[in-house]
Image (tube, rainbow, N blue to C red):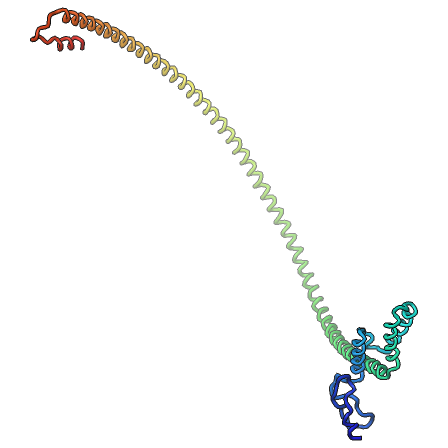
Length: 300
């Protein structure tokens, strides 16, 4: 009996640890001290191992609600078995697993435990929501009280502000009347200044037009005098140029006459030289006489 008790291990698949000893009355513990080893996790692990061995992947809904999902899956698989006779073998394996899940007390306990944990979680959430709602109600009461006090204070401030606004309105009306009178005076002064400026402008324009006309007339007179002086200068220049041309022509004639006379003298000198040469050639040559320079001098 002692050996059989010592051989008992945790019912979580693959765990070799002994069950946790509670020391209290009731059914002895079936799982070790690991918090992750319990009925729900053990059933899910066995289901995962079985699905992995068959090559099937379980959904999250099947893991959370195995009995309910097994019932739904069983009905669906029965329909598939009627419609798909060719897949009867694979569907039969899943149907067998679903039927086994339906009859597995551990699966039912796991679903009940999961439902209980979910209900506890929802209850804790509801309790927290209730506490938060109570806190918000208390805060709302405080804010309402503060708002009432602020409203009373704002009412007092509003009355004072309205009184100040009425006073400001009266002062504004007086200021508007004074501003209107001042504006009218400034407008009249400005109009007078504008009229005076316009008169000054017109007078200045008239003076400018008169000055412009006088300046244009003076410019025309100066232009006429300049043109007359230019015409006179042109006439004098032409007369001077004609005189210079006539003098130059006379000088050219004198030079031409002198050149003709020089040509005549040169021709006469050449004739005399030729005659002298002929005479020299016809005369006998005396050693002591040197006619060369005399001939050369005559030619030159």
